[in-house]
Amino acid sequence: MSAATGSSGRRRLVVGISGSSAPQLGIALLEALHRSEEVETHLVISEGARRSIELEAGLDPDRVAKLATAAYDPRDLAAAISSGSFLTDGMVVIPCSMRTLAAVATGNATDLLVRAADVTLKERRRLVLVARESPLNLVHIRNMEVVTLAGATVMPPVLGFYHRPKAVEDLVAQVVGKVLDQFGISHDLFRRWGSAG
Image 1 (tube, rainbow, N blue to C red):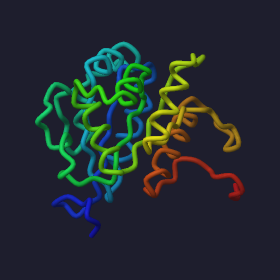
Image 2: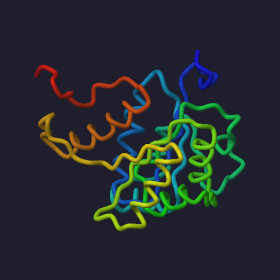
Image 3: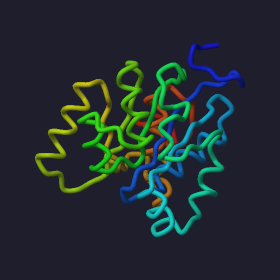
C-alpha cells in the first residue's frame, strides 16, 4: 500500500474542474476513474465550472460530483485536500482555465481548487494542468513557464489522430487517457502508437 492510499486501500487523486470551456474533459476523466478499482477521487468543481457544466454539457453539476468518491465546496478552505497532511498521488485540473492557471502561478489560493493545487506543488506531488485556451497570449505562456518551473505539467488537450478517432468522444478519451498516463493509472481508452489494430 502506497503512502497516498486511503482507508479503502486505493490510491487517491484530487480532481479539479475549473470554469473553462470543455468541462466534458473533466467529466470523462471522472467517469473513467469511477470505473477504476484502483483510485479514489477527491473532487472540487469551481463556481465557474458549475455554470459551464450546465451550459456546455447540459448536466447538473451535483450529478457530476457523484462520480467522485468525495466532493468539496470550492469555498471550503478547511477541506481535507487543503492540507499537505492529506496524502494523495497528486492532482489534475481538467480543464484548467487561464484564470486558474494564473492563480496557481502566483500562489493566489483564494478558493479550494487553487489551494489544493498549491498544496500539491509545495508537497512536490504531481500536478497536471489541462490548460484550455487558444490562441495563447504572452501572459498565458509565461504563467505556463512559471508553473512548469514550480513542478507542474502543463498538458493542453491537443488532438491526436494516430488512433483514428471516429467521433468526438474518441478525441476526449485520448486526452483523458494521456492524463491517466501521467499518474500511471491503467486504462484502455485509446489505441497507442505502434499497437496492432
